[in-house]
Image (cartoon, rainbow, N blue to C red; front, side, top):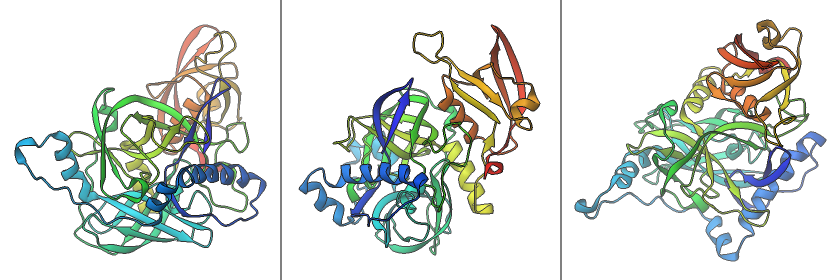
Length: 396
């Protein structure tokens, strides 16, 4: 669990909702890892210890409940979306010497590639060698191989030896509207094939969650100027109920097409872990780009601007109106394009930038080498720059 910090105020706790079935064994992490490990441990405890009734539900994964149409005259769009998408959603069981947990995933290809969250398959950054099993919508269980994971955008691809699977259909997440109806499908509390309904509450939201990096010296794989801070994600916000176990599952539109991968929920305080109607999903366009790169190369690439930024709050009554550039690297993309210290970034690739975390999330959502338009204010003048992003891998 990690704090979402906007303008210096800790307002909500964001937890990554996978289900921990057994306590995580104590281990001595590195100083950098302790931030991530402790944050995730808080999310685990909040889910499992909430009540004895919930604990029983966590201990065993349920068999999938098929989407049955009992009365064709009363079928609505939710039923249709669920019938269309549910065969493409799986339940995951993950275990290692460090602990165990469960989550959800979506089928990418008919020959067994599955997309989920990195924090599900790494047990929140504790291991790269967990035993992973996937239960399909018809109850079939298959062992899974970890193909690769991306700690920067909390996504992972696994592979099962099955054929004739039904791949999820991807929608264009750039074409979404606030207020649009959506359905979340996954295995909250281990209850496979659970369907919940809601709307898109906001688009282009930025949240910060703990990285799922697994390393003796993890830290972050990009420069924010704050050391081992949480990773920033640009997400879709929804009020569809998302709970522990939904991580890696599908957020779909009225046609059952994937618009996002469920990744996190907001909770009102450290003692709670269930849905309060504020959930988040990684947009389908970003998820597809990263999944494709992992399948093709084993890892994903991410853009690098080469600028140290902070929230621009100096003259705005505590509200941030852009990302203030404090410094640029000499051989970085920002400097090459003409961006200078003192500039305030207000738009990146057509998206509004309200603060440093917004800019970080937008940059990381782009692949290395992407050409983007960046709008800045310099001494009150609006300037537009064409920037060719570097690679975040250069910071390793």
